[in-house]
Length: 229
Image (cartoon, rainbow, N blue to C red; front, side, top):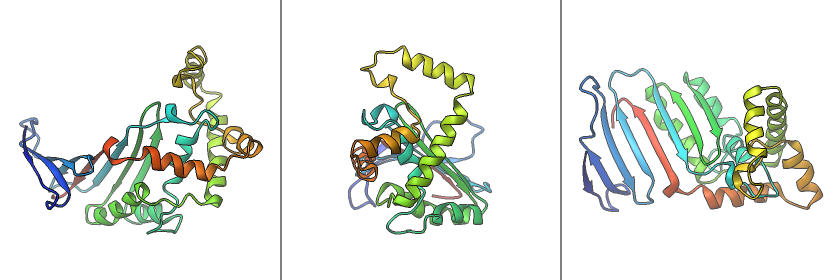
């Protein structure tokens, strides 16, 4: 893999990586970038694809939750799809994807969070614009927060009956309680609504603080598959 230095004038690119090693049977074209904000980017061109796809990895998960707000990282992940300053409609992102043959997903893990979507290729630019706003100016509206906390609580109640989840919780409960691995990752209504109200904690303010602290380009990696770059 060869690299070449970029400059700020080159569309915000600090470093480019060309001639990326790949299988001889792989006809796709790959380009690696490090942007001026230190985000790592992999662009994949496939002129035959009928589906564009995007994945973004953020190197923060529920181990970074504040001790008094278990599940905050999970709530942040779920809230980002519900409106931004540029696209305030709470269903803008999901509707745009569904209208153009797309789908989306996201997941919060111990020390990372992932966001994924796919869409027909000629609508990739519009989807990326909507997607990028999650990491710039999310709204975190109170009405949607109540909805998502209820959804998180329902998810938690379903998980209680799953053996794999019980095994995970057994491992965490036997860990050092001072270690972040022991944290309750998904959260529920008690940790994200009932207890914060009792303790005078404004959850929306904490979401904004968490997003502002951890959703930083230098710990993000973006992969984009499209017809041409």
